[in-house]
Length: 62
Image (cartoon, rainbow, N blue to C red):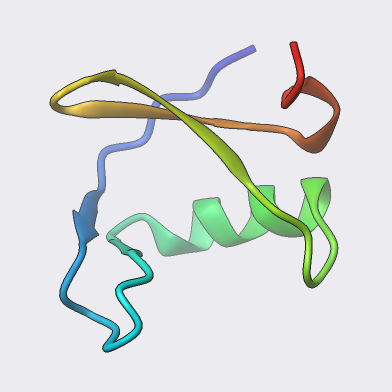
């Protein structure tokens, strides 16, 4: 089940170019910790110019 969350992606937050999600971080952090381990790769799908879908590890290849 999807749980939409309003946030913003900041592409300039890190010198390395890695994006940072700004806003709603507590909910995002809990979801990440429940679905991933340190060093895992997170797959995301761009749905439209305003939305992305973060996929749990077991759904990344679906």
